[in-house]
Length: 296
Image (cartoon, rainbow, N blue to C red):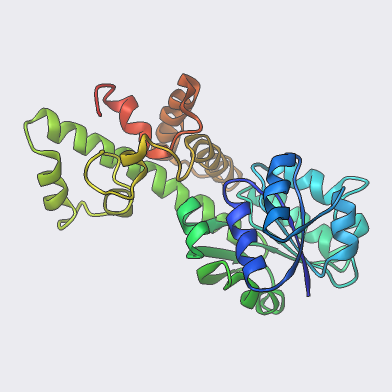
């Protein structure tokens, strides 16, 4: 089996590294030459275009930043779909618009391409450790074909259901994550102002009803969790600009089904402000520094 990987950024690079470590022949493509060079040094083979990957590979992954990039990769004249090898399995691990994803599934089916949307959770640390959670949308037949490959990059591979359901799961999860991180940041800021020791508050709340992932795994207060981005000058992790993108996707999805997400909308506005202040490439937990600019 020959695998192609398009998009070798913070997430794509370590994910592709796991495929190499498991002995696959790997072709790679990225618009950033340095990203490709890093993978070639690890044993991958570079190609000149998306079309080359499509023609040579049995399975192709994409891991890019936004919906338009995925559409361009798939549907451009020299793109993936128009040059796909027969019976290609295409797995998109990007986080993009649900409705656009479902349209891509329809186009893939017309061209007899087996497509799955398989966004991930776990951040850069999970990608490096091979412990990502994959949320997969598409047919069960295609899921069964992909599951052993995805298991080389993740610890939890969940079939979310029909086409687009992987993306639906991802944006709903990140809607909850964005809101909860702001709540944790507000709680720690208030506790500090009221004279509570930050470590003592963490000990109390992490063992009480306020406990959540944003607190116990990615605590936004420095000096509490050694591995958290807050302890490393908020280096991601999961970038604030990507959280903003996912909150915007959630808002768009909510509009498309006629519901409101008021807390999600407020969270998006706060993250937009944080990103516009120049912190888009910091970890999303850095939002605490917007809520309390003196927080260290």
